[in-house]
Length: 386
Ligand SMILES: Cc1cc2nc3c(=O)[nH]c(=O)nc-3n(C[C@H](O)[C@H](O)[C@H](O)COP(=O)(O)OP(=O)(O)OC[C@H]3O[C@@H](n4cnc5c(N)ncnc54)[C@H](O)[C@@H]3O)c2cc1C
Image (cartoon, rainbow, N blue to C red; front, side):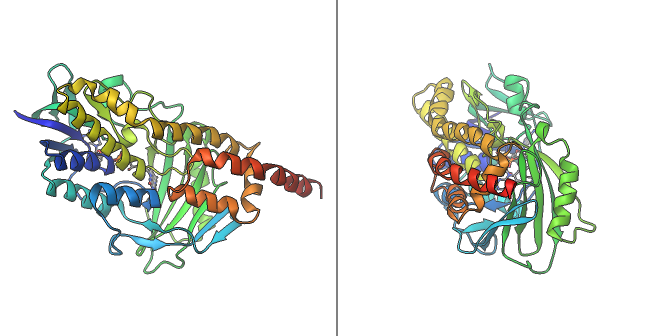
């Protein structure tokens, strides 16, 4: 049986980040994935400034135009009505996860990680520190990192379920093929569905159109998706619509136990408002690896979880702030005031972009929004009674 200092399950952005970090620190690292790369992953593929920073920091990856389509143009909408348009936004990059994840996985392998591909994780023996794959292969570990996505079998093995079905998010997407993007504009519609939003992302050979939100609060998401696709005017004839869960604000308070850590979607680390998960997947994968490395250096693998939980505190704090923020954006009663604040001048949309770029935190946004609110409420009252 092969033994690894650190065994990672899942080689998406979180798993590859954990694996490359641990391998670069000189540890023996194995990574298991049920897929072989390249593989499909339903995702808008929007790489924000925050993701770009994490990619550079963890993978040394610069955003090559072959893999990343750059846009500085964004349109914010509400039910198809333009709220605000910015043509000099901070850089946003659009990529296809098929190529993107394969590149990250390749970099982890180049750093010395051993891969077990095409083999799903079957179970873990926490007492023996072993993982068994579906083909019967058994691998030993000192620390285990579950980076196996929203339906995480590692989280299920630890806690019986990977996510809470009452709070989980869901997203639909379709790729509308084209020869050239008609426009470089990234579009976000805040009213495309209840407790969620719609997006249209331009890419060199297709337009990714999607609608996502909190599943239990957005029961008509499938018809919202049809409406939104029609709104974009894209030709999706023959293109397949797909759906996938996403932990949209559903982060886990206990992302691990002893020598087992959960990272990325497996730990529910997706922004509760923007739905962005790639940056947090990379950041948490790296933090999980660092916590495991420190625990192994201290010859105390079981302290890995305590170390990781401490390192995750700023991310958890920020996600908690964002979850409170959702009550100002998504409910039918408060959304009109948010929309009104968003349309006044350009300061709110720019703050939203600063947030995506990782230049601002949700805690900074509170004061700005609250200052805008009285004006927005007055504008709303004027509109209602004129
Ligand atoms: C519709 C939609 C649109 C999105 N758009 C964006 C966006 O534009 N920008 C953004 O930043 N985020 C977006 N997200 C979120 C983003 O996709 C995730 O947050 C991100 O992929 C999380 O990375 P991860 O490495 O944690 O998990 P994943 O990327 O899901 O990787 C998990 C890996 O684990 C493997 N795995 C699963 N089960 C097993 C098993 N049993 N055994 C072994 N391996 C296993 C999988 O094959 C996979 O390779 C979107 C999500 C959805 C659903």
